[in-house]
Image 1 (cartoon, helix red, strand yellow):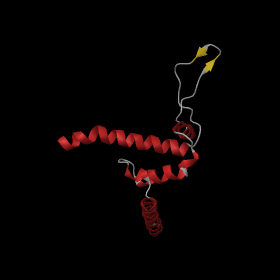
Image 2: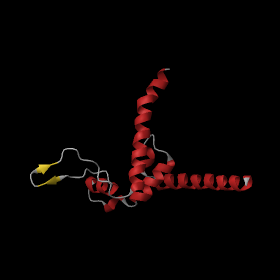
Image 3: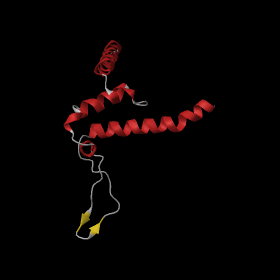
Length: 115
């Protein structure tokens, strides 16, 4: 069993190295964003695929499901709107994770430097 675990871990490490090489060979702009690791970068790039298929930023936001849902009927307009959660759950989760990591690093990293 230990040999199988070691073999699978070696395959995972090799796969991560191939993903990293492919990201930097493609020269994606997303590789320059601090706080986002190679796995998140790969997920975001693979879920968006060709970004030129989106005419505008709001269309990309709608594709991720991060746009605000509208609650209205007749003269009633809701004030407590939430995100629509349409689109790719993997992309939405990846962007949320990347934003959380970046916010955490920018919030606590300066404190660590001072200490």
